[in-house]
Every structure is written in structure tokens, then in C-alpha cells.
Image: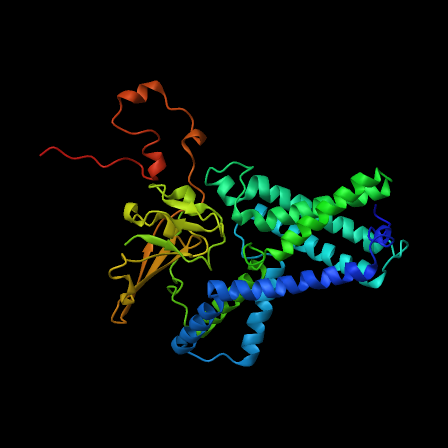
Length: 252
Length: 146
């Protein structure tokens, strides 16, 4: 399971070209879906208006060096999910984010770099499996215990709504991918293996095609907002009160 | 003026849902961010505004005068024991106010179960449980008879 290219076993029934085309189509679905989401919600207009307001209200102009420095600080914050104020949500998001990136990148490497080759550097399938397990651990932890509607709003841990489209399809996609890989490595019943593969493809397609309706695009929006907020704080256009200079904590 | 959530700032932590005494701060089923489900029922206690760690909750008037351009923003600084408000009037004037909210570190207040159970004889006392020690004073002031 950790050593073999799971996509190599498909090569007889499914030519590598079709698998590669599928990945390209899913990539395009994410791009088109995000653009549709931006258009439908008016996010582009909202950011443009906020940017214009910030520019007009700025008390000083930022140098390009300062802008780059703020962008780097934003990337550094996003890389460690620093915007979360509670560590369990932060850890689960980090597991999902890095697990998903590892899982997707190794999938691309295996499908494009080693089409139909069963014996590949063992690090690649190992990282694919580890990435998948990271998504599963972070995703299931988040789904059953950390979703705010479950933890704070009284919803059942099994509650499903539109907000769960992203995390639900992500977890199901990865779970069936790992199950399919395990079925292949143990030479399980071929019909069962194909059913698992079909479910893996179905949930993967749901994950990438439903971007306009799911929370997938939040991974692009959040850093944009975080950067704009840093710019507003730096150029003096933030509408928040200035931090106080007095410390009122006088007792321990 | 009732509260509303700026969804671009909210990270869906649920603190406002937990603290709202009117139980009107809930989680949006589409975006999983908080929102005020019934502004008419808001007590305007601003507990959620103060509790939000992301400064994502503001207050605004009702629809008949909200578009006039006023704004109320709040910054809570628990490490300094202070809360600051920035008020923008609809004619553009801005005023800022800072208030102390506590004198002990955030999270340091002991729950009643952390104290030893009071002696039964204290039931006949005028003092409440753990007074005056819990108030950090040697004794409660008394009124002298004229």
C-alpha cells in the first residue's frame, strides 16, 4: 500500500491519457468554479470597493517593500493557519491542508510522471498514503467534533448541510481512495475494487465540480482578506480603534 | 443598535453563539459563520462584540437609518484588560473611547467549585460567600449610626 503506484493497476482498463485528461478537467473545474463563485457572490466587487476605500482613507502610502513584507507575513500566517484562535481547529486545518496538498501533488506526479508504472520511487506512494491519512484524521476530527454548528449550535455530529459539501466530499474522496488502494494491494474481489474506485472518482468529481456551491474557494479568499486587513492596519485606514497604551491589569 | 457579523473576518469559532444571552447568534448553514438571526430581539448587551476574538462583530442601526454611514467598531485587548470603541458619526466625526474591563488577567477568575465549601455558621452572616477575601479588601465598609 505504501510502495505501489495505485494508478498503475488501472492502466489496462483505463489508458493513462484518460486519467491525465480527468485531472486537467478537474483543475479547470476549480478555476472556473472559483471565478463563478467570485462573480456570483460579488466578492471581486467587494474587494475592489474595500481597496478603493482603504486607498482613499490611507494616512500614508506603503512602499513596495512594505507591501511585499505584508504579503510574506500573510503567507507565513496562512502556512500555519495562524488566523485560528483555537488550537484544535488550527491543528485539524493544518492536517487537512498539508495532507490535501501532499495527496494532490503526489497524485499528479504518479499520473503524469509515471503513467502505468507500478515500480516508482517508494517515497511518492508513501507520501500519497500519508497525505490521505492526514486528511482523514483532520477531516473526521473536524467533522464530528469541531464543526462550530456541532460544537456550539446544538447540531448533531451527523448533521449534513451545504456547508459540509467541501469537507464531506474531501473526506469521502480520500477515504475511498485509500480503501481502493488497500483493496488493490490485498488483491481483493475485483468487483469490490472497481466499486471502491467508482466511489473514489464520484466523490473526487463532487469535490472539484461543486466549487461554486461549496467552501472550496475559501482557501483563496481567506488569504486575500488577511492581506487587505494587514494593508489597512499598516496604512492607517483600518476602522478599528487604536490599541490602548494603558494596562489595566493590576492584580495577578 | 443590534449586532451583525462581518463574514470576511469571522473564523467560525462559536464564542458569540456561546455568550449571547438572547440566543440569537447562530451559525449560517451555508458558510458556517456566525450571524444574528433576529436583530429585533437583540438586547444590545454587546457581549458577542466584546467576546469575538477576530473583531468580526459590529453594531448597526435598523434598516431605516443604517445606510446613513455611521459605524461602531470595537477592539478588545484582554492582555491589557481594556476595550476600545471607535464611533464614526454619519457626518464623518470620529470619537474613540477606552474602558477598563477588568483588573485581573484574562481567565484567572476562579469558579465557585474552586473555593472551599463555606462553613454552615456563615449562613447567619451578612457577608456573601468568600467575602471579603474574594473582593481583595480587608473588610466590607459599614455604616456608622448617627
